[in-house]
Image 1 (cartoon, one colour):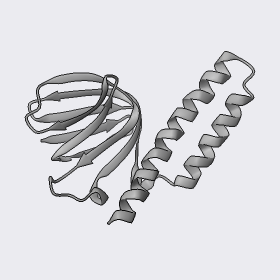
Image 2 (image 1 turned 45 degrees about the horizontal axis):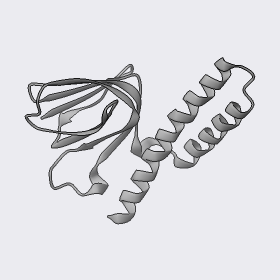
Image 3 (image 1 turned 60 degrees about the horizontal axis):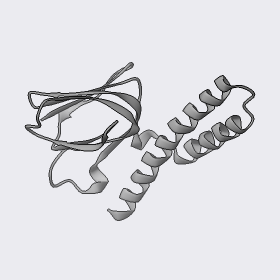
Image 4 (image 1 turned 120 degrees about the vertical axis):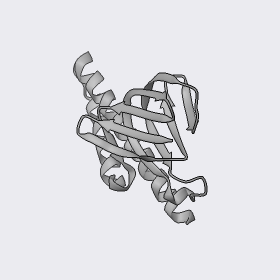
Length: 142
């Protein structure tokens, strides 16, 4: 099947894949070739792409995303998101520091708007930290 991960900045991924794991609003789903047609909203989380059925976990590609939509049709998975941060490009320590700063901003928020903005930043950086942890764990196993 072909997987397309499209962001506001362009194509983040466009290639064949054996499987893709997506964080839908109804829960995490794994899509294999010849999947039934589907459209679904995505929640913030990790998108994982397995290019080949025999790939080791260290070869999986992870992307931190912050919601979007997926369309599955005709052996094509098209994922539309505002942003997708590729796991190998995420600096874990920077993501942890950014999450901590967002937590500090939330604790000192003076109104609902500041609280919501800080929570949004906390959620974003929590996903980035999760992807970085997955990448670190997979590298250790290989």
